[in-house]
Image: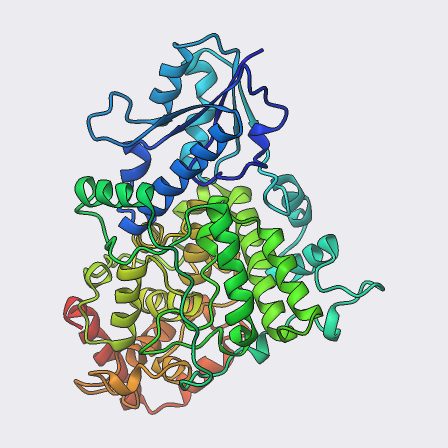
Amino acid sequence: MANLILVLGDQLSPELSALEHADKTRDRIVMAEVAEEASYTNHHKKKLVLLFSAMRHFADQLRDHGWQVHYQRFHPDNPHQSLEAVIADQLGSGAFDRIVTTECGEWRLHEQIQQWPERLGVPVEIRPDTRFIAGKGEFASWAKGRKQLRMEFFYREMRRKTGLLMTPDGEPEGGQWNFDADNRKKWTGKPPAPAPFRVEPDTITQEVIELVDTHFADHFGTTDDFHFAVTAEDARAALDHFLDFALPCFGDYQDAMSDSEDWLFHSILSPYINCGLLDPLTACEAAAQAWYSGRAPLNAVEGFIRQILGWREFVRGIYWLNMPGYARENRLCNTRALPWFYWTGDTKMRCMHKAIDATRRNAYAHHIQRLMVTGNFALLAGIKPEEICDWYLAVYADAYDWVELPNVLGMVMHADGGYLGSKPYAASGKYIQRMSDHCKHCHYKVQDATGERACPFNALYWHFIDRHRDDFASNPRMGMMYRNWDKQAPERRAALLRRAEQLLEQIETL
């Protein structure tokens, strides 16, 4: 029996389940850069360079290990513009009995592949993605019968399953599961932030950069200063760089933002983990070992592991448990279009400008910039969930539907009615002032809530609180906010709402 083995652009691992028990003499691996996948959203140019270059390097690695590989490079005039068309062409070029693939990370593509047996006339075997620590069925079993699904409790199960940061008697190291309360320091310039890990583009990457600049010129972002790893070897070097230079301070400053530093102490490993160049459990084990050997404090190591073992696994479970209906959730009934400055960064709001500009240049921003700046603004302004979700999917190198959609629709926009998170992550400008130095460089005044120069986040925050009273007044985690709102003088409340309405009417000029 000869198999046609499909390897997708986010499955760049030699341990991929689709390759298990394959026969190098008979089976053929298919990889393809196709217009349909590259252009269904406005993917950042650096994201396209990362994936196309990493795919080409991985295909070469497979060939070096004796695999038969059919690889289609992107060209707008290719006769096969979709994965299905590439597979159909390959089926016609040999006697293949079935298609084998590892489950993909997107419902859209999952539905297409499920139709291939009927459309292409051969069986399709879709194997579980064993690169994740919790399988889809395992998460569904954990979720069954629970009134609320909370990451913290799932995370504890994953800690027990893997033994990460667990004592021999089954207790968490340090006596507690979560050290998030220790990870909220503002960064004032000391200790100095390390330089980010860099890989200079090789010949393959330079060819891809030229391709993207030529054929995807209208896509978001820039290819300038591309320095991502594109091989598993370099991705592991990026992990080692993080462990040596950034992890020791990551915990304290993981929520901090800086007007002058894009990267601070963040790992920038999610692009590699999510496309298969770096194994998530390997990264977690390496961080844990850094604590055991005294190279990093527990709050930093636990915070890093929680992002991977907790949130990453949790949101994937949420995605596959609830799709496709989850993508249509809009419980807060938002109707406002995404402001154009999300694509340009042209706004006088310093925090928004800095986050969007870093995103444009780097195809990356860290979780607080995403959640509490660009996400917070979208929440307060009532942006349509599908539009802000599409923006996040397009602009970040680590964004795939399974991880982006629950994080944005559920955590950022609270559009699922609290299914993923117990309260909306809404905040005024005071939060941004507390965690960054953006405000002192801003056109607007963070200490003001009304007036022409008042920080837009302030009035918009109270407008959000007021218009969603029916949604949140009974939420125990929101009660204090409503008591504070009700204590304000009627004329003060009226002035705040007027200011917010003006901001919303003039949103494109903020």
